[in-house]
Amino acid sequence: EAGVAQSPRYKIIEKRQSVAFWCNPISGHATLYWYQQILGQGPKLLIQFQNNGVVDDSQLPKDRFSAERLKGVDSTLKIQPAKLEDSAVYLCASSPRTSLFTDTQYFGPGTRLTVL
Amino acid sequence: RKEVEQDPGPFNVPEGATVAFNCTYSNSASQSFFWYRQDCRKEPKLLMSVYSSGNEDGRFTAQLNRASQYISLLIRDSKLSDSATYLCLARDSNYQLIWGAGTKLIIKP
Image 1: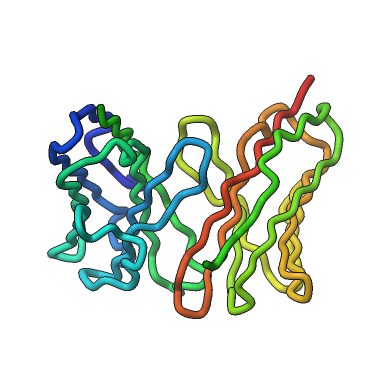
Image 2 (image 1 turned 180 degrees about the vertical axis):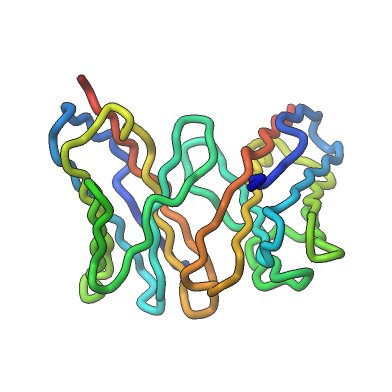
């Protein structure tokens, strides 16, 4: 079974530029998560989708971050404009949605973003 | 703010020893708990879910103490390959997910 795919793996941009990340979850997984993980910290949930609906985006900085999952499959996360403090690894995860309380999350390899 | 707290470590432990660490959570509405393992520069992977009755998987035992609001992870007969950062995760009744910052474990030969 193929895992969660993410691209690009690495991205270096200047502050105030825009960047987009792509995620393709495991086939059949209804729930998709985007996380930001800063070095030395745990993952911080940015947004959680159930199919193409948003379950939780309370920690998404909506003035600069946006995410969509139009067909309930793959997803994109965009930052516009980027700030220095956005330097982090952006992780995408998916789960099968047998139960939101017990579901295992399967993570992609992440995109390492450096903002100069 | 709902928090999940972990001792960052590192815990330096000789191979073969037993090691345990805890994770405390502040939100009493937290309903489900998990331990994930994250190797350096890799993605987190599920180690085990934590049930009210406690659960064991080989050398790993997880416990939940709702009265004191913490979960624990015990590793017996530690292996060099157990070296990693261990993250705890709590999900509350509103489906909100809060991760701890992780505990770094180093197993020494």
